[in-house]
Structure formats: C-alpha cells, structure tokens
Image (cartoon, rainbow, N blue to C red; front, side, top):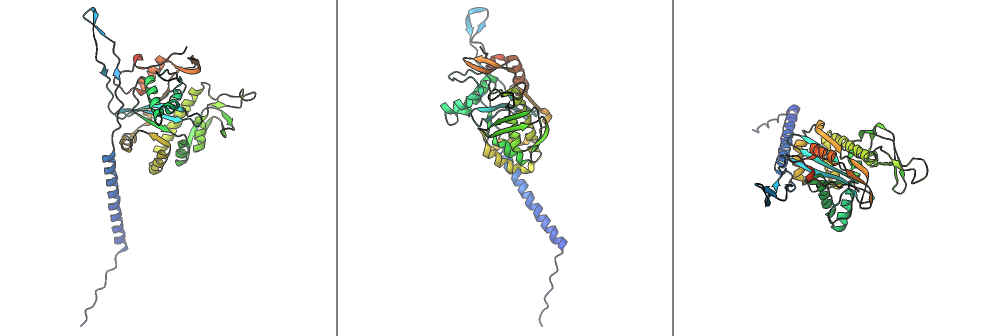
Length: 361
C-alpha cells in the first residue's frame, strides 16, 4: 500500500520576512564591523615636522668672567600633544603663483582650530632666492627645483616667516570649489561687497551685489576670486579699482568665510562621503596619507565650529623692498599676537627672535 506524501507546510509570509530581515541585519553588522576594523587598523597619526630649536645666545658668560663663555646646546621646543599645522594653498589659474595662502593649526586634544590667512604679497627675503613676495615662492621653487620644489619652498618660506614648523600641506585646484559646492547642492553665503569685474581674455565675468544669497559652485569660485572691479570711471586700465576697502586683505576674509561655510555644509551631509573622496582625489595634492585622514576624521566629527578662530596677519601693503613695490610688510607685534593665539603648536610662546618678518625700505 503506497504511503501518502506529507503536504509541505506553507511558509508564513511574516516568517519569511523575519528571516530576510535577520540576514540583512547580520550582513549589515558584518559590513559595519569590517569598516570599523578597517578604520581602526588603518588610521595613523600624522607625522610632525622636525621640532624647531629654541633660540639661544651664541655664548653664555659664566661667573662674571667676560673672557670665557659656556656655549649652550640648543634645546628643542616642546610640541602640544596631538596638535598639527597645515599649509592650505591654491594655485593661481593664470600666473602659477599661489593665489591663496592659509595656515591652519588643529589641536585635537582641546578641539581648537586656528585658521590664519597670510597675505600673498607678504615681504620675504629668502637666502639664495630672488623673489620678495611670498606668493612667488611656489612658482620659483617649481622652476628651479622641479618637480616638487614649489611646495617645499613655499612651506619653508611660510615656516620662516611665522617661526613655526609646517607639518603638512594641502594644495588645491580652485575647480574644487565648483565640484564640492555643487555636490552639496550649493551654499548660502553673505557676499560682503559690490562685485563687478569683466576680463574677456579669461572669459571671467563676476557680478554680485552685497547680501545673503544661494551660490552654485561656479558662483562660489567667482566670489572668492574677486578682488578688483572694472566698472569705475574712465577707460581700461583706469576703470579698475579694489573691490574691498582694504584691498586683498578683504578678499582673504571672504575666502576664510567661504571655507567655513563649505566645510559646515559638507559635514552636514556625511552620506556623500564617497563623492567627496572622488572630488578630493581629483583636485587636491597633499602629503597626508589615507590613514592620516582616517585618524583625523575621529576628532573632526566632534568639532564645534565655535572653537574655530580666523584671522589675517596685519601689515602695510604699500611697502617697497629691493626695487619691488607694493610688498606687504607685516606688523611684527600684531602678527606675533595672532600666531600665538591661533597657530602656535608649542607649549611656549613664539617670540620675535623665532620669526623672520622683513622690514621694507
């Protein structure tokens, strides 16, 4: 007698859904754990530039004997824990100089960031070099010591002026403004001044009125580039005048504000991280490794923008030096105050003896 086949029980739709959700959660958990392990074991602290030496007198007079001297060994300055300095710069699209020069110090322990603009025409007098405006360091270095002499010379020049080491650099192609701002669907930005500049040779046309407005990537780049207007009285070149009352110093403030605005918007959309990475790889050159970025990402995600301090080094942009006009002579006292407030990576103050701020003629 043939056995009757048992009827298979129909699987409950809810049970099938439950099993599907279970395995989905298992898979997601595995991915999260895998990513955590990747970040944990790939993250590496950025390195420090060689510590500067504390200035010492050539000889120390001992026990009242003016004929004998006890030479002092230079001592190393102590760095603040987990505090790094970064050179942020953008190459000029026409001249090959660095149109924007900023220095950032990030104290990851106390969660403080200082961002200081160094005027591009800052007066320098580097031994063995013939340029006297800081923004020419990059093009001169590239010309005389290719392929990476430009960024090395710029780092050295900035470090000499400020009296602090520059640990790492980030050199950007200004096209990144267009790509990154468009990636976050534009930014709301308060344009500070009337902007009206036309340069047919560059096909550059910048026209904005002061006030809060929503900017696309192309518009954001135009705003940070603008420093002159061409709608003055008379004919070219007499119709050209400064867009800002304080000339290029005003533009550096706008650049600082734009950077803050973009960074805030980027951090507000972490789901677009893969797109950010692609843009970054295409338009940024840096000596930071992927592991360094992974390590810095930890404290950066907890950063409060109220702890961000911005400033521009004060000085006189009408000075002359060695036949070069309109160089920017830094105000030593005012600049030292900003360096110590915003940038100093040491546990002791930066002093006048540690910086090299050249005086004009």
